[in-house]
Image 1: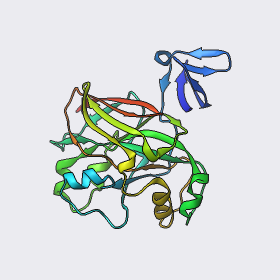
Image 2: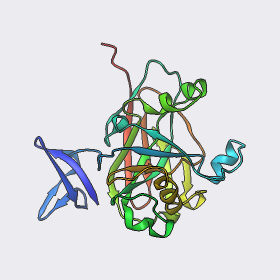
Image 3: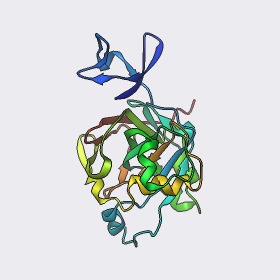
Length: 243
């Protein structure tokens, strides 16, 4: 696993084993003693909309002929365990659990059959969205871009993304449960498409879309995104500080 964390005031990062803690050489650092950070520092966060067959059916929408993409700013990134801030301007904030791919090698116009060579690994992602603002605006930037609206982690893992289980829970209750075999556009196609528009840099994050079951978050909630072979991303929801 590729992990970034802070311990005793120092930021550490690299490839570690996770076995009841972060294993570094002969040292085992209990997870409760380490402050997990976002596992990479992206220059951009690219998200994909409407990319699960069952989600499209849930919304009674036609399957897209090509990927639908949008951006979140790097300032929206939130560490594992961090607090999602419910903005005062919204009355409906939703969770969207997703598999994310992290770029490891710079590239542009990457053919799908060469995409794997540009991948560092995979992580859990929550595309937090102010749904009422998304519906009000003519585009999605405001609804998707608030600080803390892009939690991802807890680390980056090497997995085969073609058929892994993905589950989102709110306060322990399962609200999304699917498998990446239901993706409309797989990771190689997404990398090919996106890199034909913008240069992908090491550390960039591509969130591959959310399965059916999207719903609301409330202040005080604990939201978890769990992906087979990776782990669990946990974040709480808090009210904005008006001071």
